[in-house]
Length: 295
Image (tube, rainbow, N blue to C red; front, top):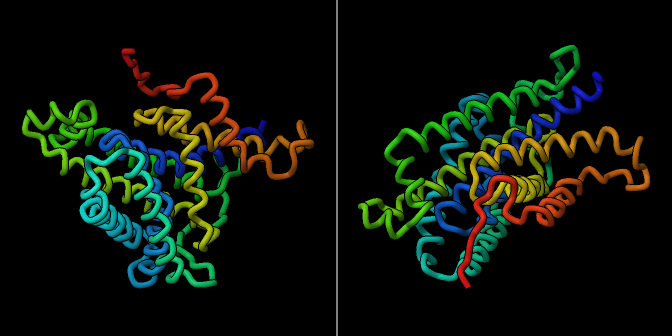
């Protein structure tokens, strides 16, 4: 039982990172109806920026500055690269975001070099006893930070004028324009928020293990999370991210005992197996909006 609880808590911690990344994907998708493949590069950029800032400013201030910096980077990318593509086919915009991801990672890799950079987190691999089981402190920090960020984010969308404008634009852009809502501002804000969330996720991914040129691959596990929860559901992104994290952790713990024939690293691909199973049963995800087309 202790092993089960320990594995579940670790999965919730790791799943918190996936949830933050998934929220970034969903926020951009809801505003622009396009999946942004630039999230992995923004996550990597956030971790690298924090690794440079942590020396002079300390971890907490470095994370705050890193989030602001990557949010501004996301805003700048939307204004300079994505904005001219508005009105183009969704496929074209998606390919543009993929190009942004590749270009950014090439530049960022130059700042990483061949060494592993550290983000200077205060936890490392330190462990603490919780609910009678031992769990890494960084997983607790991941989960609690994500809970706070999600609460603030949901409150923003529900109670602020700009948040309400974003929700209106996500439902119907033409109607929102007719009501005086600046859809272009909504697009820019979506990219800024997604960038900030990616920076937080990148920092937590790097805690304990550091930043290398392959860190961005972790962000790809957010794709099964948004498929599971639904492309247009913020709550679904959170549920999907946490679920993927727990499933991955449990399979890593128990798969060698119950299904050793699957190989030693099946947990790595387990999120994508979950994604395929969900697509077979519920193509729009657990909480996604089912589109009805008249023929």
